[in-house]
Image (cartoon, rainbow, N blue to C red; front, side, top):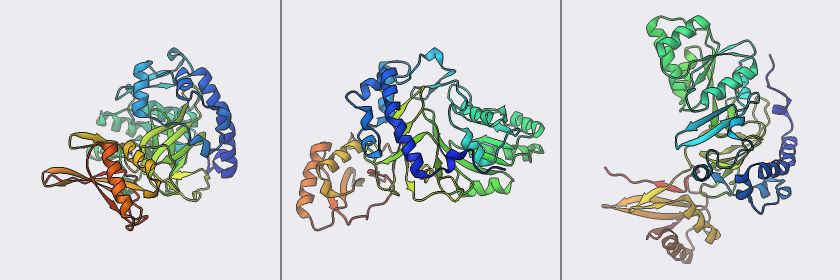
Length: 411
């Protein structure tokens, strides 16, 4: 049995990097030519100069809030797609509402690699319990399974007894869905006395997979791996049998940036996942997912050589209301821009008696009293609220991606 989907997964990392950035200038030029939204967002940018990570990092990050605004201004897709809505295969609406297209190309969502990594092969049957209604998850995983040559049971969500009946009779080998719903199905099968032992492997996403749940599922005969994707990007990263982080999908450039900015962080530091997806139908250039992760060093023991992330580590959107006013990560980033000598910053929000209080912690060392005074003034200028400043030792703040930490307790 082949261990890898194709030779792209095992190529030299330097070759992959060269190929991606050799293709990027032309991809950006085409996006600007065919999608009026990208022509406006990247106005004044010379695509020929975007040929490495340093220059890519100079482009603006497109975050979900801005995408929502663009879609409202220019419905339905904000002018960011390269064809008319009627030329797509499916049109989806996710909460927000945010609209997403699906093209007609084989494995348009890039899910086949992730399913292959679980052990699925042509002729296998996949029980797909992701939702098919209005949102793309069900179709995302089905298209990947079909690209592998697998048959799919389009189960969707709910109707657990009916799903168990289908599994008992159709004998699927693989499962796609949330990990907690897989447990629900196995519990229901036990309750009904149905044999679903054909199920051996699964690709799970959309909910947490704590070690205890993974161990329980494995003990009941189903080994599961995790996948990370979004309704906008499709599959962005997936776990492999090595179970050491998640491997980035091919034909994507992933950056980890400091929340509230577009500035890449050092390897191992937690930040927001920003993706450039080489999708000719729906180009997304420096798309901020709002999810936190960190880059793992080295390559996976499974032989796949692409960059790996640790997995989903929370949300980067840390907008916090303090004394009735919102503080955004972008404001902390502005303070950092004004005072690069302050090092890494973290705004900690607490309660002082019956009032909100905020302290800006800066990794500048404790011997710069003049800086503390200046930072206090800048904190008030930027946020329009008073707060204190605490200078701490370099590398002493938690590496959790938080720019704003809400530590308030109302007990």
